[in-house]
Length: 190
Length: 190
Image (cartoon, rainbow over all chains, first blue to last red; front, side, top):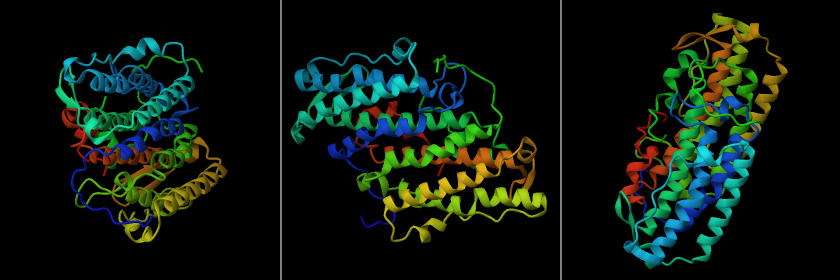
């Protein structure tokens, strides 16, 4: 690959191989970042009613089970005639109970791999990707938008985990806090 | 490890093993996220005068060469009598030229490993960590603050990379953009 200078390209439309490239890397990325980490980095949150990294992995697991591929199947089978089931953003409180972070990381990796196998087996055509479904709050959406959101949702939670972790050192860095953008992010991805 | 519920703990002071736990994982985290990725995820930026993921890795490499351990050595040798050399935030434009992202990821991992070996060999005492140096803009800082900032700086750039990547799909996600916090982060970690 010849490196090129960063440029201000136009906005990109959804491309399935690019989406799969993100989705397939997220489990290993979170594993490298979090496995066997001291608990300060995995069990602490940003304050009352916010999530820890442990909570985030549980949320990602719940998405693999109930959100992304189930919604893709609803679009392909029912189109806009059947709305998606609402997603429970707090299910992980119950489902992660009694598990270690290592177990959750394993579970996420295994569910994600199975979902990507299923996604690839669908051999989606450009026409399939334009098919529409009905989101209970957002209204009409395309399969393409659902799959792009699956990848961007991984990134929003990686963004959140890096922010939760940095938050634990907000006093320890002293005057450098002024220079550290992550300490000025206002929790918009929680 | 027994998992515990996330709680709103007090702010944590710097702890050297916790800092090393972050510093030692960052190269593998960025490698898992970025190596062999399609160029949409590695060479694109957030617009004019912003960085790509490729630029960020170059910046981290320059920090390993000229910022963190060199400043730690200045504190230990000169205390506040000699200010740190200013850090060049644009050196990577020159230093990364002609290299592939894979080469940069290898270089970062190797420099970081060598720096961590040197850091551990210093066998810093609590008294060492309280020693003060002089930052050219921020004034008096401690060795402890410098080392905590090294870890938080990794996290601020992981936060930035996840945001740069998500930015490429800001149109592709359609109406879901309202739900994706990373798309509402205003570039405070660039």
